[in-house]
Amino acid sequence: MYYLFSMNKSLIKVLGHTIVPAFVLVVSKLIGVIFSAEVLSSNIKFKDISDSILKSGTFVNGSDLLEINSYSDLIMYVAIASYFSLILIRSVYLHNTHVNPIHVRRLHKLNLTALIKDTYDIYHEATVGMFFLWITNTIILINTFLERTYLWVSILTLLSSLLLSIILIHDVNREIKEFNTKRVI
Image (cartoon, rainbow, N blue to C red):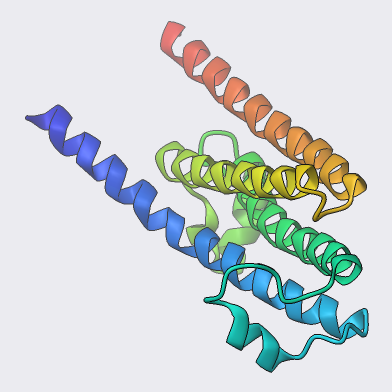
């Protein structure tokens, strides 16, 4: 019974962490489309977008679609990668198991010790953040294969996602080593 309760608690926690990145993903894509269309001086108007959302097919010509979609995908990725990077910073520098005592003292003086989180909270949030990072990458790769996004956008996002994932994996390995060292002693 306890196992079932803790599993439900973990599931609820993970689902709770999905709201913000899902919102960031959708809103950043919409902002990216509007911003890209305005900056690139496309002949698309916001009214055209709202009239066409429920219709199938595209409402932009091919060359404009490639540019607008490429830059809006890039904006969407930057938003999700920034969100995930903040989680990584908390994981690496503000994790209660390996936070630097100097940082704790500074945070205490600023009354910001609530920023220090435990393993359970950090890795639940990091798992969700990494999931959305790779979902965004998948969207961009699909758009690239459909020739709706430039190849360089896919390569850039793929490489940066690999780098961010490696940083998280390194932090998790460090946490496991510290746990095993404490358990042996």
